[in-house]
Length: 88
Figure 1 (cartoon, rainbow, N blue to C red):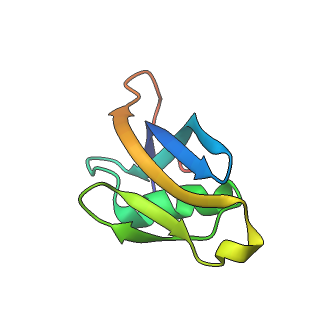
Figure 2 (figure 1 turned 30 degrees about the horizontal axis):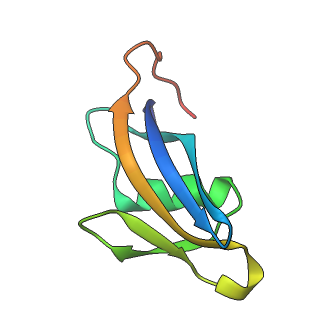
């Protein structure tokens, strides 16, 4: 299955403050990233999360005592028009 790439700016909130990072989201050609695509991207970066606020795209860890992250919020997502579709 061919996929295309989106860049997402996310804010990681932990007990010490917040940090903004960029993550890559891969989804099917012609479709926009879904909640499942975000959950998979966070899982690939080592965070098991679940959606807690759909409107603000805020995720919380499934096991909050096992991580210092308290929540993750998606700020913006843009399509990478320079990326050549691949079967990732």
